[in-house]
Length: 392
Ligand code: RFL
Ligand code: PHB
Image 1 (cartoon, rainbow, N blue to C red):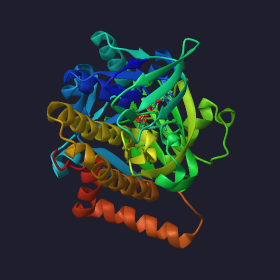
Image 2: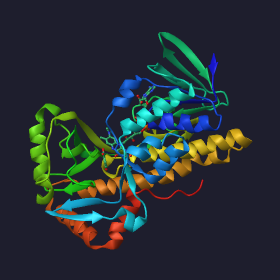
Image 3: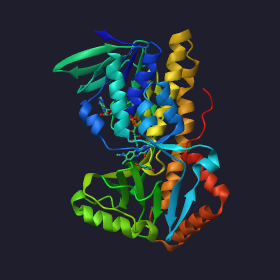
Image 4: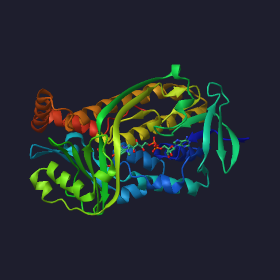
């Protein structure tokens, strides 16, 4: 039977970043991933990193390319009723954010892991966690056609929203808090110059739109769409026409269309699992919580969980103190709920929910308030750049 100190399930950003931080402190781990490296690196997902995430990447020795190629943004625009209001992140909070694609980050992490010579087992099947309530947990899995068992001290469940690690916990030991939103996001990636230097979040009576980017030559656009919509209903020309309609005139006039490199529809959901620790099993990132993408918090929350868990494991192996590990769940959840609240609020502010005229007028009033009040803008900015950590 193989053994390691920390068994990590999932080679997404959470799993690989954790492995990298542990490796730097001489802690041994084995990462088990269901997909191939090509599949994992090809997923088009997040695009925006909080500065504390950038710092954690640097601490893990994987931040160099993000710092070199990422775009530093000091603000973004909120557009509504043919107007736009800039949120001056830097001026209001002293902090900026970094535009850097999750697939690039994923590539950096896979490369860094290979460079250490330590393993990721790709294409594992039928992963199951056993005896996590004891001091000798095990993970069983199928790899290259045969069944294996891995003995370890701890298991990190970094296997995303549909992962197995959470499923191995008896239902009565956890609580799930959920909210589904009555729409999805249709995303399109294209090699066209972004229409603005900074991101534009647009509220329109036909629905929300977001103009984001991956680089100076690659744009990432999103449209709020009905949950039932299929991709074939959205040829590129319809997508760009609809986006133009939802933007204020000065932006619409600058929008350059081009063939989609990728197009996808995702439903929007908030979900939190409590607690995030079960004996020697720790849930990390999307395995424990999902936020709608509006506030760009998903990847950053995953990184914040990793930061806490890595600190706890390092302290445990350095001086056998279980204190920080014991605080993991409560500390992580305190941040998770604040980001869940923010993502829910920002989603509610910007999307079209109903035809109820009362609700619509409240939404307009809130947007106007945001545009006039420095206090309201600061509230948004402070959450957007990421709340500060209570140490550690
Ligand atoms: P991941 O990235 O889902 O990785 C989990 C890994 O576990 C593997 N896995 C298994 N492995 C072995 N056995 C099993 N049984 C397994 N089951 C699953 C999976 O193959 C996968 O490799 O979770 P992680 O690491 O927690 O990272 C979370 C982030 O990926 C996620 O929060 C973000 O992508 C969310 N998100 C955004 N976050 C941001 O911070 N900023 C953004 O701008 C942002 N935009 C987005 C987003 C997510 C989106 N989608 C597609 C949901 C935009 C979109 C459209
Ligand atoms: C993205 O570029 O994918 C992105 C950026 C900001 C968000 C959500 C998604 O709020």
